[in-house]
Image 1: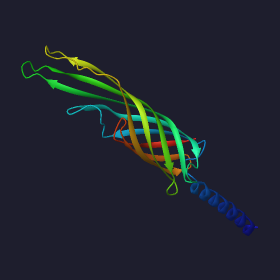
Image 2 (image 1 turned 90 degrees about the horizontal axis):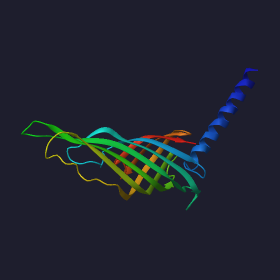
Image 3 (image 1 turned 135 degrees about the vertical axis):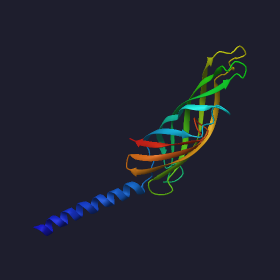
Image 4 (image 1 turned 120 degrees about the vertical axis):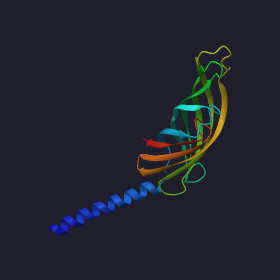
Length: 194
């Protein structure tokens, strides 16, 4: 009786192992898959010299696979949206009156993205793509100084290239890193797949 139980456990274990291997040997981003990335940026390209970040660059993006096996069984195409937000401050002081004054800035990037995915190794989803977006910059002033004037700012349309990868340490959970022009030069975080 003990050997029968052992055989059943062994069969279940082997079945589970084989099915898990098949899961990870398939394309990591397939037709109908949805991904949500939650990230934090490193090396923001917004602001300028003397600007200090008051809220680090945060991003959320969504992507859906719309074409599987684009060129071969390892390639796919995804489309989605991007939202990034960050704030910074620049501060000055008058040598005459010792008054402090400056600007508070907020940056909001909203964009549409398309990405080509290629499955190079198991559990790793590598991709590169293009984003078209709107950068909305707002500012307010603080302090009091007679020569202090706010700078004209506006919203800008733009595009960017990005390259990234997601490593799946669970079927529906991955760590991601992405390089490109967005709310930051480098974004890292977590991906939820559903």
